[in-house]
Image 1 (cartoon, rainbow over the protein chains, first blue to last red):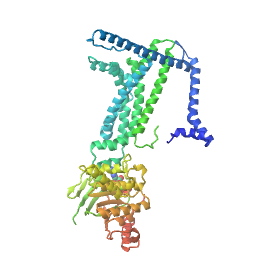
Image 2: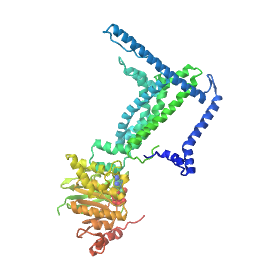
Image 3: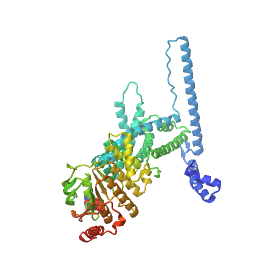
Image 4: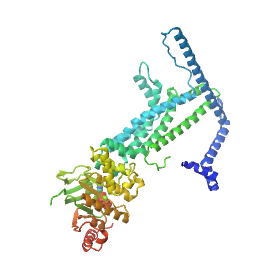
Length: 330
Length: 262
Ligand SMILES: Nc1ncnc2c1ncn2[C@@H]1O[C@H](COP(=O)(O)OP(=O)(O)OP(=O)(O)O)[C@@H](O)[C@H]1O
Ligand SMILES: [Mg+2]
């Protein structure tokens, strides 16, 4: 079995090979990030003590950690309540069935308040929906634009115009349009979900479009000539020549888009009151209890962590689909 | 002479903001089936341009190209091109690169036939041992071999080669030249090859077409190389006729068309 490269110095150190070099290497790999984190914690708790707000001191690491465990406990309590609620219903329904065999049982949904972790799930679901639909729109458009110099020139100014628009500017318009158009008897999705998903989509697709287009437009002239000499049809041309060439650029675009999507989502949820982490923060802010600031700080850290993992996830995906396994991706 | 491929009064003018830039003009050439033609001339004179017009990648602004009685107006697999820098798709293996071409010309063939044909062509260029390697795992000479296999696999009416061995070291180049002569002996393709190398031109060609300097380059001289085949590079170095042909081309390039360095 081949060991991952980052484990090699540890193995070497255990075996006693080059102890000095390997210790230095381990310190650089593991020690330095830990030192950075410790210094950050110290600065944070030091600064926090000196910031007085209307809700008391700014939370330091310890308060934030405590609130995190509280949030976990609340989540578990809520789950147990829900479990109990369904069990009660089940028991009641069975009892009625025993008396009256014609009775048609219905299960009513549990309507407790969503916990912090429910909000995370909602946010992740929204961002994925928006990102997947956005990419399915953006990549084909990018390829089309990239294939034609004329089209690129025609469309580029429009993209450059919309790219820097803040999601907050889109939100009121999207809200109005969605509430006017999305009227159904039993809506499959909440209007608020659709509003935030569309806002995220509108703010995040531009990077993917432009990067895909540039990737396709810069495909080597030689490969285009090969395609012409072989008389490849449009489909083969796109799948065998254009997309593989443009894959690195497409992924650069996708990663930027996903980053933006995640950032925009929090703001959109906050403003549109649609469920998710943004709403959690907003509710805590409105709540104004002594715990609020710590809870918001938990949310801030979780948002950062999720954003980081989303980017790593894209990187992993890029590594699996990219043909050049030797390329250094970071 | 019955022309298989015929270039008549070919001229191309590239558009510029001021006056159009006439790169080549008055190119007249008749090529027989199975003939091996070399195009030689100084850098920038318009050799690639001529080749690209025959390939259909450029359109002549005046005159035209006729292949087997049909006018050439677009690229197609019956005029396969071996590009200078191999131009293999880096994400496909040698086998898959050839496959892409074979699937274009053998649309009705069965899977087994296609596979046989791909392997046959890779064998022809002695690349069957590394069929499933990607271009970045192959040496320069091997990549060029795959490029040639890809072109040959299309069974083109004309094989167009733009400095196919230009980027290779002398030993690898000699090797590939020998391979090419072997293949040519077997298949008897009609070939137009661009080269900078006088020895290569004399060794391989039936005729050497020497181009004058641009702009407005045209055909200066044509040398018929009447050396018996198969040709052996070592034996030929002592051959008076061979040295005479070499001298003729060298004199054209370095005396009559001496490039004025600016
Ligand atoms: N697409 C184009 N647009 C404008 N000018 C061009 C174009 N292609 C070639 N030229 C010009 O035509 C002339 C001939 O170019 P070409 O590439 O045919 O030369 P070449 O003989 O193949 O040179 P080399 O031996 O260096 O490959 C050059 O002056 C070049 O600048
Ligand atoms: Mg050239």
